[in-house]
Length: 126
Image 1 (cartoon, rainbow, N blue to C red):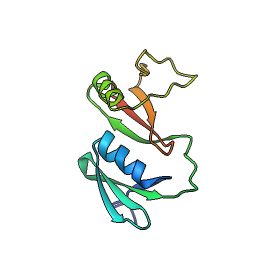
Image 2 (cartoon, rainbow, N blue to C red):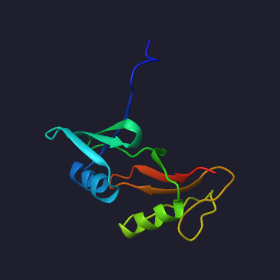
Image 3 (cartoon, rainbow, N blue to C red):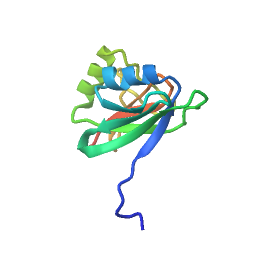
């Protein structure tokens, strides 16, 4: 029934102005505002994918990664984001290099948070 229907996911943010500045200004994504009053926006990602972003002042950030951005050169991506003021997370169960990148048998990955505490990552496939 829904197997042939376009779908997208969504996530909440606490402060839409801070989120828009981060996703547009820092990450360079195209953000389309649908409803300014209620804080409903769409993030337009590469490949024609869209993700709904909406305002929820009472939101609690999830414990998982909400968006993974695949990159060709994770070192360059981490350096570029660091220059834009992004800080990378370090988790106890992972061995991070000096930049915060985890190198392993799977993808190389580095996690960071948006202003609302949502976890995102850049990752490079093996």
